[in-house]
Length: 229
Image 1 (tube, rainbow, N blue to C red):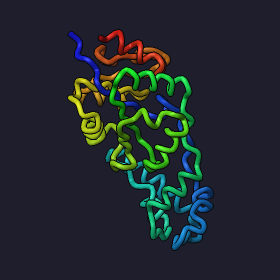
Image 2 (image 1 turned 60 degrees about the vertical axis):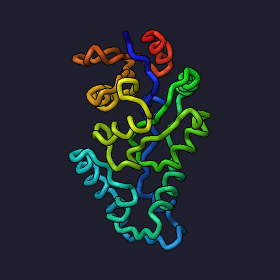
Image 3 (image 1 turned 90 degrees about the horizontal axis):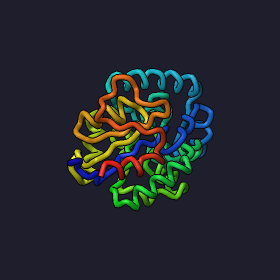
Image 4 (image 1 turned 45 degrees about the vertical axis):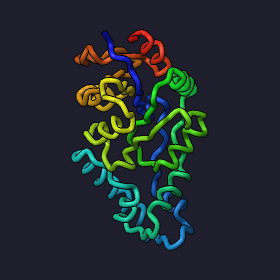
């Protein structure tokens, strides 16, 4: 007998939304201009680009995420209020566009009584991501947000999945993790005891464990879950 799914962990970019742009040095400088006590040095643009490349390489190797404010500090910016700086920059840069079909599916899943957790990698602070969800009319669908910008690690780091399990409030075998990246949103959650469904418009990837479900779009998930019961 299949154990009932009680909680849903949902990826963001590529699953619920089309990813938004990353900030460049010009946008950052404009967003920080006038922020009390903040000083942007000459040569900031080149320094920020160099730091960004270094940080991305190091973070990939360690599975960590360097805070955005720390990237600015390493680029020579004097930041009296790191949280305000991150808020200002990511308010100036558009966030992702939420897919209306995916949003409708999420509302349906919520009506099915599932605990819903957003589980995604992002530079954006929680306040910015919550505004995006609220603007799309799905902010109230989520019981918790598990963001790499808060945790300091990115999927597939074990702490990400431990945080999802804790936020879901139920055993991992009753959690369905859904997303579009096989390694991070399907294989790793399944390895840590959760169930998983991969969003793959091109079908099942070769070698994917048959216990992992495959759908073409988040809008297929309600029917897929109904079929499991």
